[in-house]
Image 1 (cartoon, rainbow, N blue to C red):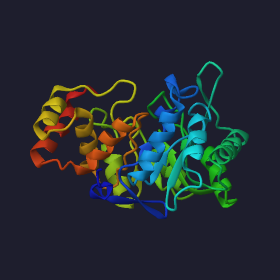
Image 2 (cartoon, one colour):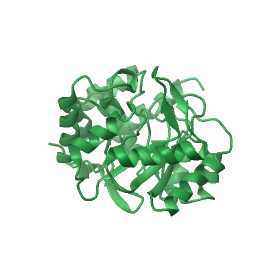
Image 3 (cartoon, rainbow, N blue to C red):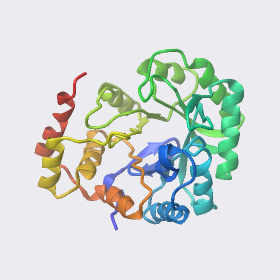
Length: 292
C-alpha cells in the first residue's frame, strides 16, 4: 500500500490534508446520473480510500443526484476524525440528466440543506460555489450576490469554509472581498494550462487549488510524450499525469475519481512517484503543444 504522506500535505481550511484525495463523482451511474452499476463495489471503494489514508473527499448532491452523498454516508458514517468532505453548490439535475443552474438564494440554501441531510451531518466542512460559466470553462460575470448567500449560511454555522469552482481570477477576488476562500476548483491538467498564473498566485496566498478533470475528464489525456515519459519511469500515463500535477505546485490537491478499488490503488500509488527534472521538462512542454 502506498504511503500517501510521501506526496506531502497542504492546508485546506483549518485542517492539513494529504495532497492525494478522492473524487466521488464516478460512483454515480453513467453520465453522473442514477445509481452505481455495482452498489457494493462503490461502498468498497470509499472504505478502501479511507483505509489507505485519504482524508479529503470531493462530492456534491447533484452527483446522481444525491447518489454519491448517500453512498458516502452509508460507507463512512460515523466519519473518521479529520476527514474533510468538500461539496459543491450551484446546480441541480433535471429528470433527463441535464445540468441546470441553481444559483438563487433559495436554491443555494436548499442545496446546503440537501447536502447536510444526505451526508448526515450538521455542518459542511467546505462548500464550493460552482459557477456554471461556459460548460466546463469559466466565463466572466459577477458572482457576488451568490457568494454572499453562502457567506451568510457560513455565518449561520451551516458551512465551515467556502471555496469557488469554475471561476475566473476576477470572480475569485470578488469572492474574497466577501468572505475567506480556502480552495479553488478549476479545470486544469497537462494539456489545459490556462490557470498557470492563477495557481502560482493562490500558492502565494496559501490557498489550495484542486484541479477537476486532472486526467482529461470525459476526453482522457492522450499524448505521445506523456506515453514516452510514463514508459521511462515505469508508470501508467495517467499516473504520470497525476505525478506532474503534484510536482507542479505544492498547493495542488488531487481528487482523482474511480469506481474500482484496483484503479484507486493505482491512483494512490502516485504518492511513490518522483519525477526527475528531465521528465518534468518533457511533460511541461505538452501544454505548449495544445492550441490556445
